[in-house]
Length: 240
Image 1: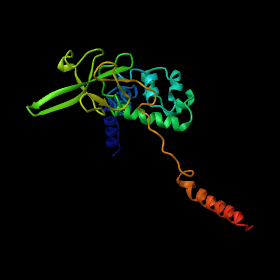
Image 2: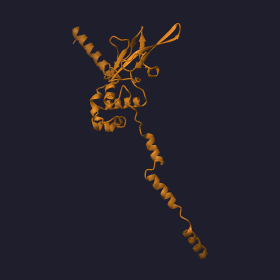
Image 3: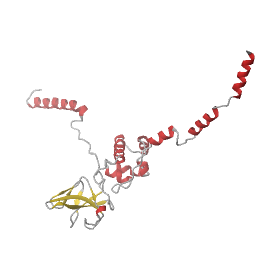
Image 4: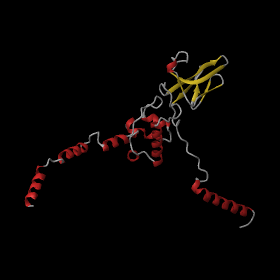
């Protein structure tokens, strides 16, 4: 029996070790290898930074068009990348106040990342903050003519612009023969068409108007008003 125990002990000492490969495998993950599960999880949660668009080429313009006086914080955000990566805590440290302004900025940031722009977000030809719109007429048949609003390079007519450079835009319509109607569209002087200039607040979500203090205080405010009205009526009638 004793000899069997000795042989088994010797066998354990001579058995090849399997700890070293496992240790190397764990060390490779811990060193930050991109194939590790934690690294892939981090990369999947990193927000993608959208590219600027012709109407909104920089941070200042973005903060200007979404309105609510956020343009005043433009100098606090150093770059386009920072605009789309700063957390709400970091924005607070930079001095973007009050909290509702930070929440509003984050909401518009998410919209922009999803490609949900405001008026003019689909413009491709913008020069010095201004985009020119023209009317494109297409004859579908001898009796039917359709009119579309298109964005063209500055100073060019529809006829002068190659067809592949004509950009049909949303939110703008043709009224009458050649009148273009839509957000912030102003007629071109002496020409058919319109111009849309980047304007502060043109994408702003207008706050709802609170009547009698909002939903939570409406009942209280209206009750006190009725009491005051009855009291005033009794005094007017001579009852005290």
